[in-house]
Amino acid sequence: MVNTVPQPSAEVREALEQGRPVVALESTIISHGLPRPENLRLAFELEEIVRDGGAVPATVAVLDGVARVGLDKEELERLGTQDGLRKLGVRDLAPALALGASGATTVSATAHLAARAGVRVFATGGLGGVHRDWVTEQDESADLGLLARTGITVVCAGVKSILDVPATLQRLETLSVAVVGYRTAEFPGFYLTRSGLPVDWTLESPEQAALLMRAQEALGTDRSALIVANPVPPEQQLDPALHDRVLADALTAARREGVTGQAVTPFLLAHLVEHTGGASLRANLTAVRGNAALAARIAAAYAASAA
Ligand code: PSU
Ligand code: MN
Image (cartoon, rainbow, N blue to C red):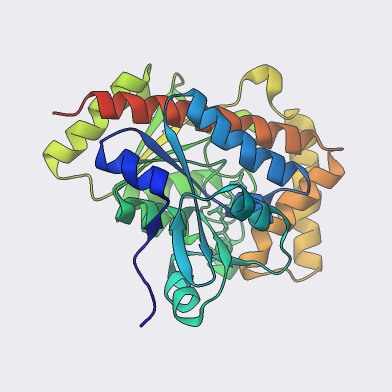
């Protein structure tokens, strides 16, 4: 019989048992979303940021057919350096476990495993969503559907700007996923501080986020996610004109090279890193660091608000 129960590390298990704050971190950004060696540096750094914010970090991945919530140093190194690791969305979890595979988890798979292990807060860079060529390709990230049926708070810098952002926000509304801006009335644009689109609700503090989570629980709407959209500071965003120009090239290149399916997002992100001289990478790292820090504060406020 395969072991299908998500396995928390000893530290994560203890924190959860004692009601102490825990923050889940995804691993696809490490294995597929960022170039080496910045990817592994970030993996370690995020864990430090979460600890500094008063929470226990729990990076999620599947290793040798076991779903893991909380990794040690060697396991993080494996994620950051091993070739051929799979990219696992939530639908890939059962095959990976049944077949003893190893892979990094996307937002959808990370949110699912974290919530099942009892982790309430999760930090990432930018969510997946509706792709720009949806009309012909119907490419929509599994992140959206999964977040519509999973009780977890996801701190992100919006959705990746390579996507159709208005369509993604519309899908989130249809799916009844709560979206709030953190200290902004505008939905952030991942590499960019602003997307030009409004959010309906704005939070000013981690304590307000914790209150909102408790309200979801009281109302029974905590079976879907809360998205806390946290913008990169304007002075650290990617230059918007450069962003728009390079992204247009990236989309053309993806079409020309026939990139499809799971490969689309890593292809576009890598194209941006290369053709912005690393500026998109810096904005991406800034976004993820800021989200990990805020997620830790929200997890701490949530733990402190326990009834
Ligand atoms: N955020 C980042 N970099 C990434 C991703 C998110 O800053 O690489 C990953 C996440 O794991 C997300 C995935 O779930 O991209 C979406 O991929 P797709 O569009 O194939 O669903
Ligand atoms: Mn996709």
